[in-house]
Image (cartoon, rainbow, N blue to C red; front, side, top):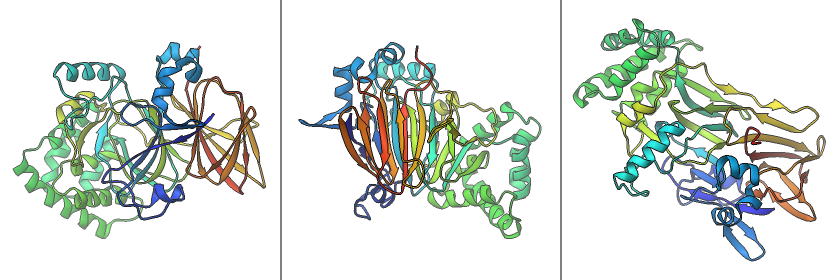
Amino acid sequence: MHRLEGALRSYAWGSRTAIAELRGLPVPTAHPEAELWLGAHPADPARVVTDEGERSLLDLVRTEPERQLGRRSVETFGERLPFLLKLLAAEEPLSLQAHPSAEQAREGFARENELGIPLGSSIRNYKDDSHKPELVVALSRFDALAGFRDPKRTVELLDAIAVPELQPYAGLIAGQPDSDGLRALFTTWITLPQPVLSALMPRVLDGCVEYLSGAKDGDFVAEVRTALELSEVYPGDAGVLAALLLNRVTLEPGQALYLDAGNLHAYLHGMAVEIMANSDNVLRGGLTPKHVDVPELLRVLDFDSVDIPVLEAEELPGSAELMYVSPAPEFCLTRIDLSLNGAVEHRFRTEGPQILLCTAGSVQVACGSERLDVEQGSAVWIADEDPDVSVTATSDRVQLFNARVGAPIA
């Protein structure tokens, strides 16, 4: 067992207060802090703190794969940590994006290697050969766009905005309210010639403003307001139109979203814990100053509409642990709620690699004869070879997340 120091990532959409405040550090920070990576991805591995000093978790796993990961994890996923845990803080919207399937990632990574595109290049889509299913759990109120809305509801939304120039586009899904219709409309909008887009966008935004002036709560208020907010951050971006096709989701603290390969999404605002397969592959279609590759995004997108994909944690019988169930074999995320006035202690088995992240309060983590006092914003690495672990609350309200390998890996 070792204390784990995350790798801090600064992006323009990040927050100058959220992550630092959680970690008990001064605010505002000099630069926006967007993500704290807790894992062993080669792009930015976390560091374990040992008696001899700090050491890269990536180096530790590569040097002692079976001791750190366990034989079954190595046999299933290879000599690499199969998941990546993050703290995420979005002050402004992230890009409109999707992630590839495992097969698409392998093909794309090999193709860009053959083309000689450096791994660090800003125009590189595939940083590794892995897919990237992901699960995000809200720590604060968390807003997102996630998955294509039912086309019939989108027709209602476009009709409600009541802009004549939108009607030919609405006809693409009104006459074909399925994945083919969504593909046709999204592809048309995301590839509009600039003169056409420049003429259409002001009319759509005027329609949005007019709609809000007379709309009732519970209609399409959140969807329309989001389009207007995105247009202020990314004026003239076709992604603003594309946002009108997606489910607008608000998570309350503790609620989660699971996003599989090909699911178009954009995180808008809030703080969350995020876990994913150990990958950094992103295909962007707009709402960003970063590299956008529309043809590649269209190749990986899943145009089937989805219900608003909100997950609630499921209680594990007789336990203070709650599980966020997902189909991803690479990871499993659970939440442990402790209190000095309720469940004070929790024990769990050590099987495979695990990362404990404390997001509220403080605990003492016991592993064999070792003890670590862990404060809010701190993390712990637990290897497969470590003895079973117990956590004991040392403050009134404690919230921990436990990241580990997902489905049984027999």
